[in-house]
Image (cartoon, rainbow, N blue to C red):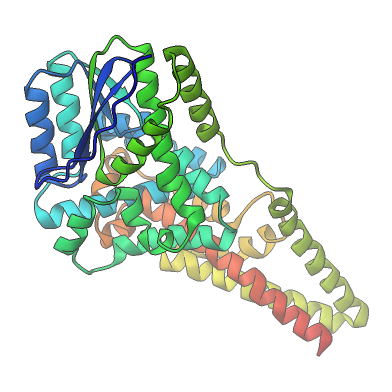
Length: 415
């Protein structure tokens, strides 16, 4: 195999870029800011030369489909989302898109314009399009798998906070996007000090995209490929490509790339302990109730009242904060104390189902979902987004209520 030629990244006043010869083929990797007009212009400039017969873009299949079919969210089965436990993922994806759109609106630029430009021009020139990023759902699941449950809630809450915040995006934040990635920028308050977040968000995707480029040059007929990625990935991709310089045949390179992709596509194995903890809590609570009734019927009844009032009230408060239907709020109050004693179903599942029953979203709500969630008021205005908030807030309320009520019960037993 032809020796790979490493070329330093060009830090010009324009968008950062590096070029490499790999398996006898040419790869140009352009670093872009996902909300920068200059990035879109640079993509147009490079593709207009007609020098590229393949275009690789930093998109996964789901994000690509969402970009070319903006109405794809209208086809979402909301109840299935809750049933399959994907509500947090949907909220996170919407919040990411909302943050990106928020920056774009303030600076009069279109989010993902450089990706759209690459897709449109590649189609016009009949150049092959390659999607090289890992599925965003897999990335988020690997992020979730790397952190404890309280951090997971903080991540989703932090993402919502970026949307709810009324602070304007500064020019500096836009410029930082040329050094970072939209996911990294959004998660910056978490990722800066957390290696367990940085690795799946940034480093693993650097490896993944480098491996995908190696796959492309060893399995496609493209002779010259333009890769359009976030500028923050340039150094990582260049570094991982350089590590494979010693591989001497295209077959070995392709095999190595496939191994990397398989490893990074694997979902984290779920530990048994997180599954056991809810049951342990239930066992402790039931034991507490039993001890209470053994001491006196009055104490046992008092403990149950504490449990119902605290757990139910906090879950109902969460549903109310999400502006759920009155019946949803009432449902949260009665459901939370029961679902907290049954780890197979959460309070959010019940409240979301009630909200869907009384305020069933229409096609217009699904179609407007992406636009509505770019503004804080839209999360409460749109029936789909509001149902997601009902699920999230009532779940949080019930979780807090479980611990608060648990401590109250313990205090009553030992007092």
